[in-house]
Length: 459
Image (cartoon, rainbow, N blue to C red; front, side, top):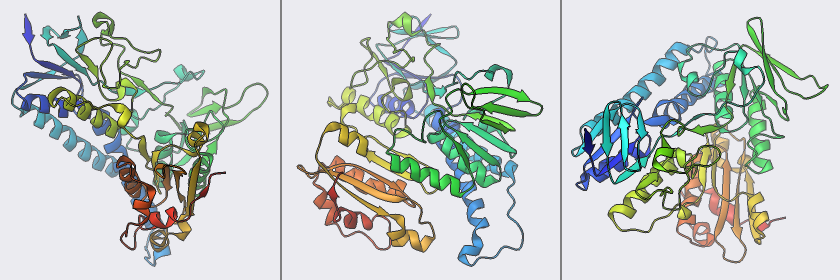
């Protein structure tokens, strides 16, 4: 027997539920399929749990430094990891239940639990039931990528997902991967009290960023006692008693890091290998990401890919924007495109990094004439008052059009203040509009107009 719908959505990550609800509100008969936990990566193993842990780690860090603010503690700060995890579990469970309750209470929408597989371009099987619809949306997300490290099959290791089950303090946590996930876990567990070593295959941390950002982040981590090893080109792991040894070098070199636990944080892989995409004729790239055009349509008419599985964003906010693009195009006759999206994201170490637009390296590669301004956080009053002066602000503008090309704020409040710049970029306004704004004192954002008044030609 075949059950017919107007639309089928596979996955309840960031873009799926909102799209399902909007299509249902428009009178469409919709099915949404979930095989595991409602809410996807962000709710269950990504943003919400990790930022909850970051908040606990920040509280521990601030308590240890209470004397710097004149607040004296009578006993050493102690972190109860079981209570830390319980707090995180509560936040995650509430969010996941909220998504499920919302979906189950939506008219014209049926929730189907189980694993979905395509049987054709218009049909999906879940268990013993065949679902059919002229429009199908794939929102299956991604999972941790396992690197080709020799000996990995002989040891126990953690990923960002299994780290959510940890309710103890590792003696020495080795983290493979010097990018966003690895850096956030590295700082938080150091603040919880563990010894931490981050190992990066490349020559510097977060290689997609400019070198000054990489160096600034490195300084922040090392100032807190996090060990960092780069240029680890030939990693190999082995068991040594109760510990794990990770060899870092090729040939005769002999760097070895020995720890109690190993976390792999080297990237993500799409959850597309068990969907039967070939049965539907949907094309994927060499890494398994679903190929889409700028309107998120796959190579098969009537099938879209939204969220992390399409390799067009890989962030919660870009996944939600995928939903907005698809829904507006289908229901409002809009012509929205991912090409209109400005690259923007955050690195949620403390202090955080807020990034928008092009890096300096990308601007130089484009050949554009640009102006750039930079200000250390030591010259930002709000940072000085809070006693958090690590990092800097920088912004680059096109010398001819005067539009903002890109910006980075590595420092206290950087993840929020960056939106002043991002919104100006979306408005396609010249930087002078932001320069002449009167921002509130004392804030980090109030220094953005000052920074724009100090632009110099990019070297």
